[in-house]
Length: 291
Image (cartoon, rainbow, N blue to C red; front, side, top):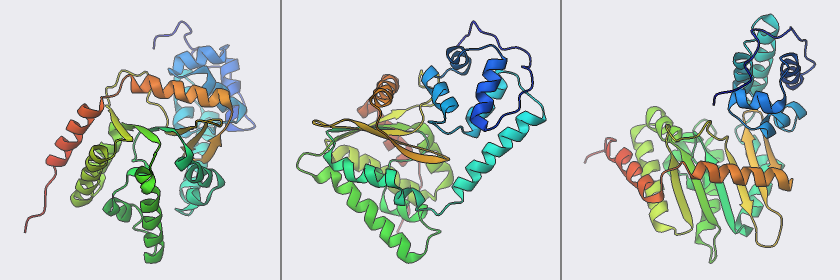
């Protein structure tokens, strides 16, 4: 997005107390409002506000974009960027099931069956409700055998959501990056099983509405992963994971913002029939075992 607020060549050096305070200090040193910085980054003012207030954790990708947009270089910028990357690496080294033991994730699991509608966006991974068993086993392969079996059973039980008498309407926007990563990184038989599972689920379950967000979708930026649970008789909530946190969002204004973001992304996605065509083409291109 073109901006009327060109960044200065290099704002005055600032020394942050925390990475998020560094973003605010850089913005203020550049003489920009949150709205102006958001325009430079092609994101929302709400996201800038949440990063600066600490409501959303700052990722290394976000910080790198800020540094580039404001043309900030030097040892202090690299030190803060390295700090954020260390925090992300520490998060990734946590036990694999940490997110599933978290209060936030458990709240998501408990509330899913009660929802009237589930809106989801996933950029480079598949929603847990849509995992094929071979894909699960490949995903959990580094765990011990008992742990793998427990997790596979848990995911399978969760997917029985679609078999309820009145299941939630599950509207998923799946990023093309998930397909690309699957085909590039997974064994061919695992990739094929996952693609065929997606096709089967989409064709068998009327409550599932799966749509693909292509790499060239007309969006200024791809949305971060999130899930919104919408209810008939209670307040809606959202769930969001990043490389450094998992959280439930209950503030009505923030949930409404994610709903708007979902609909904006949906307007740029393929429809359900077009999505099935792409999935079947990707599956047909994979080698199949013979004999």
